[in-house]
Image (cartoon, rainbow, N blue to C red; front, top):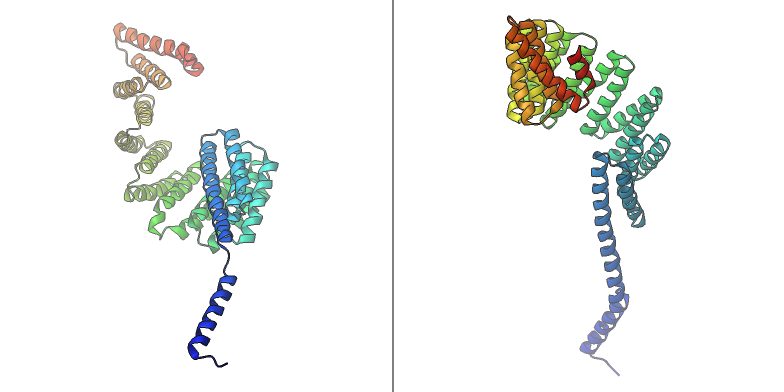
Length: 377
């Protein structure tokens, strides 16, 4: 029997269709895969939520609650084979144990995180784990081990151009060298980090923090002129990026440095500028402290007790407004002391006694022992 071309074509088409259908996965299988994928995604969302909550609790120093949340998140990541997330969870749990000063457990979790980071080639996690191991050894007073891990972290961060980690680890390493009184090495580490990030506009805030640290290292060595140079550069940077918190810090640090040089007029100039910036940020506690500090320079150093009293009274007014009783005590007792020094008459002595009594009464109510002793003296 001879088949025509149409019959042959139809037969071939039917064969191919039936064969293809046999090769396709079943609908049941597809639904099963989809369900598994959807369930894994939902579980990951839950784990992500637990990790976020755990890290917030860590920042709030609620360590046991943080540990519980992070461990729950870790279990889910392990169950769904989310390796990167598992690594970061292990790192975060290690951070909690570091805060709890359980260094053996902390280093175990960080090393597990490090192993995963190397395996999956995640250099960010690798740099963070190495940095954290360095911190653990630093807290355990094993300085050589700490330095070795900080340096490894820097190598990884530099190779991957992880600028945030370069800054963080450099500051940690410099802090360790500073603790060891090896100031030249500390400054070298910070300068290297500054050279790396300073040309990059998005890292100007980090550059300001490095300048702050370098200035403070010089100030600790009583190299006040060099400290002022770094603080001045930091101040320019802070103003450029319009960061008033940093601007305030640099102004105060320059005031402190000039005060150490006994250049009191320059110190007052920077303290007053800082007070203006602080006023704009509505940080009334800091504003009060600066006003009292300015009063101290006028009173204790320049013997200008009348001006000192004016600043103490400004500080007292704000301290009462924000109900900061410790600052109220300080302002009251400093006012009493200045009135006593200034007193040209019995009336002024009586006024001094009134402020001293108010300060003593408040100090006793809040159990401020140092202020009580000062008032009684």
